[in-house]
Amino acid sequence: MQQIIEFFIRNKNFLLFLALFSLGYSLTQKAHSGLYTRNIASTNKITGSVFSWLTDKRSYFALREQNEELSAANTQLLLQYYQSKQEHPDRSHGLNAELLSNGAALDSLEGRALNIIQAHVINNTYHRRKNTLTIDKGSKDGVVPDMGVSSPVGIVGIITHVSEHFSVAQSILNTNSRVVVKSKNSDHFGTLIWDGQRIDNLLLTEIPKIAPLSIGDSLVTDGKSTIFPRGWPVGTVTDIKPAKAQDYLEVSVRPYTDMSSLYHVYLIQRPEAQEIRELEILSQNEF
Image 1: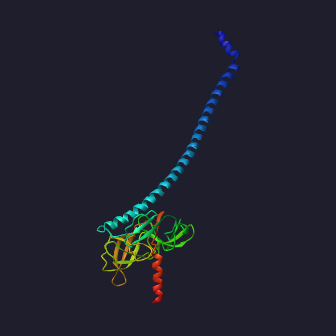
Image 2: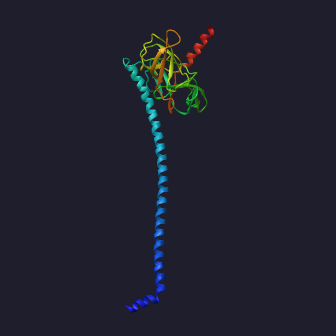
Image 3: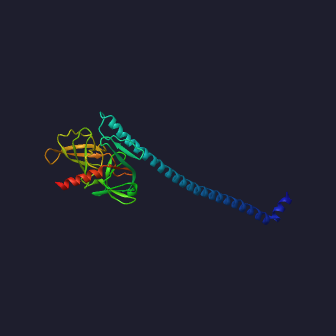
């Protein structure tokens, strides 16, 4: 026992060095292990973020492609809806539309084909008094001035300017906008305007008091213009009151389309429109 004690006394410096070395080595290993763990965690986080970003991008483009497919399907459903309305006149009046191989619709009330162009809104103003829509289709796609513009649920404007690749439409939220519309329940018609106030409220003017209108009635295009065919959806009557002009009503209308949220639209052309306009201009010049 005495020899053991003497051994520790003689070698105390070496033993102290060995103990401190062992402690330092142990602490170094722990530090390296923590650093390694943190590096692995950081690498995993970065890698995970990259893969998450790539997944989001793939999902975005996949969703965009799916939206395009749904929009094309909606075009067919929209046209089939009008066909159904005509096949069941006891349920509602409207456009009889049938999708043709060239993407047109057949309006049996007019007896002529309607050209339908699927497009997207790339700019939309609704906070001004004279609002417009910019659309990603132009003359190379067959767009011409005076084509009607509709969302999947109702009218939104009329094409006014066309370039090769783009076009601009006058929104129904424009104080210059004028569209002839009627009730689905009768042939009494009036002019749809916007007073520059609320974006969810249009006004139907010049509608006679004898028109059988009620709150909740659906309004559709009248078809007397060369822009929209007869029976295209417009909106719902929300209020009725006497107009300043005697024997007329002023009707508040909520448009079917949310004008602050537009992307998929359809450009509508009645092929006989140009012929009608030329004939009307000719007749006006003769009288």
